[in-house]
Length: 170
Image (cartoon, rainbow, N blue to C red):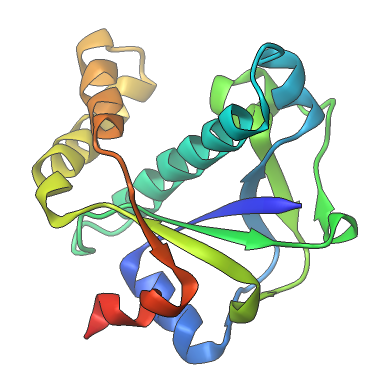
């Protein structure tokens, strides 16, 4: 199963140095039955894109936890055995649009399982900073703030093959 793990640039650097993503449990996003049901007309590619966007939104929340982090969302796509992925289909969190793809991993993810990385270009920085500044108000229901947060998704994440990820730090 392909899973999308939200991260940050320092988180990615740490994973590359450690040889794995951890500690567990890890939050990830994937094509779940709840996502399939919600987006019934979507093909697999569209469903995986929706899961990746949910992980990008989670990456934004990781950035909000530490304002000194570089304002670039990071999503790591990994191929994981289905039996290592769990989700709770009856969980109330699944009612939220982005949480329909939410899964948990209870084992660290070896770096060799990362298929690709998806990272904001530096030019997305101002939009990401604006989204970070609006996140609390957006969560409180402010429509203008929600529009600002959604605007960060107007910046497509750049694709990196797994062997290219160390070059982000060189």
